[in-house]
Image 1: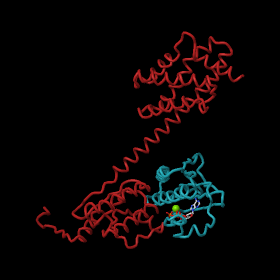
Image 2 (image 1 turned 135 degrees about the vertical axis):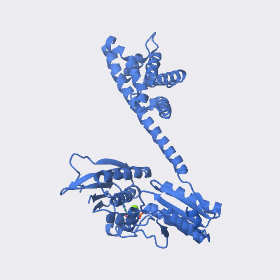
Image 3 (image 1 turned 90 degrees about the vertical axis):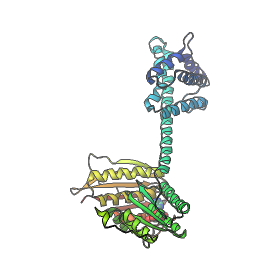
Image 4 (image 1 turned 90 degrees about the horizontal axis):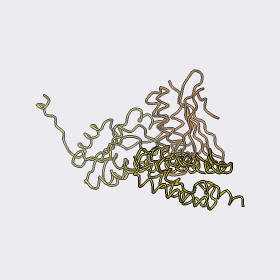
Amino acid sequence: MVKRDNAVDLVGLLSVEGQDLAASWVGEVTGSLGGRVGAAELNRELRELYEALVEALRKGATDVHSEHMSEVRAHLTELSRNRARQGFSPSETAVSVFALKRVLEPVLEKGTADEIRAYLRLARILDSLGLFTIETYTQTRDELITAQAEQLLELSTPVVRLWDGVIAVPLVGTLDSARTQVVMEKLLQALVDTGSEQAIIDITGVPAVDTQVAQHLLKTIVAARLMGAECTVSGISPQIAQTIVALGIEFDGIVTKASLADALKLALRRSGVDLVAHTGAQR
Amino acid sequence: MTAPWTADEEPQVYAVERSGDLVHVRQAIRALAQRCGLSLVDQTKMITAASELARNTLTYGGGGTVRAGLVSANSRRGVGAVFEDTGPGIPDVEQAMTDGWTSGGGLGLGLSGAKRLVDDFRLRTAPGEGTAVTIIKWAR
Ligand SMILES: Nc1ncnc2c1ncn2[C@@H]1O[C@H](COP(=O)(O)OP(=O)(O)OP(=O)(O)O)[C@@H](O)[C@H]1O
Ligand SMILES: [Mg+2]
């Protein structure tokens, strides 16, 4: 009984005879977004949300996680996702919800005690809706970042052909498991595609080699060997060399060179290419 | 047991819930190591040790947290980090600390190697309760 009365109060606040509160809301939000969302789109977004909210309150929803709020949550999710993709900030996203509180504020001055109490209850619900948009916004941002990281993963692992039969992969940055895996698969594929028998893995740009990275390196080298190719690891900095030794990783039987240039010289020699310096070319 | 955190310097807490979090941990440790003035070799050792322990927290501990910050004792400064999880714990610590012993197809060098990479290494674990590893690298 009490619950139904509450519901009526809240709905009553949002449906005042002769007043288009949704329009005032749209107006308020338009101002805060500085015209960066199309007027028609914003109008549609907020009116649908408004209707869903009134409907949910009519059914007695008391906070954002109520069963009756599922439609509202769907609209809020869409709104938050759009804002995140369009590059708005979290506050610019949440303010769309909070603006509705401001639209209803006149009730505080002119309303009855019951209406004021209803306003406060509705305000609390709107707060939870606002927080929900921030959570969804953050989630969407995280997804975007992950997607970009994956793209970067693809971009940042070139396998280059240095010479006939010699390929190299320069590793740069932090090597996590996913990235190392991608690089190593690409390297093995490139061995097949180019018919190369010499591969150089250059780790000059890698800040740290831990057991997982080492394990990936070792596995790749063994796999390359099985494919009839030889690998050289180049660019092991003094600090990484000392760390590898302290960790206890054994690079036994693996050819390492200080620089990519040295590794290339070795690979060429192994492929039977002679490098001859011309005396005349020195000048 | 916790690290002797430097007064006025609250250690930061980092979540270790997915593999992407390991990148943040390494970056945080690197920033601390640089602020503390560790040599390049010591920076790399500390970052690598942190990478090992954080991965164990994730893989075997089922996720947890890393608390990292500057530490000081006897007018020395250093970088400290505590890796904590509420996972299954390590039933046989001596075995786990043995070079090459792994329960999961790794190289089995993470724990023992991390110990060699840092100056202080403390491991606390209880079956069914979890594991906490504290490491410190002092500036020279
Ligand atoms: N936080 C933890 N919780 C439970 N068990 C752990 C934890 N950390 C390590 N262990 C156990 O100790 C073993 C040894 O760990 P260690 O890090 O030395 O090797 P690993 O992780 O198996 O291989 P890697 O050389 O790749 O690190 C693990 O295989 C695991 O069984
Ligand atoms: Mg490990």
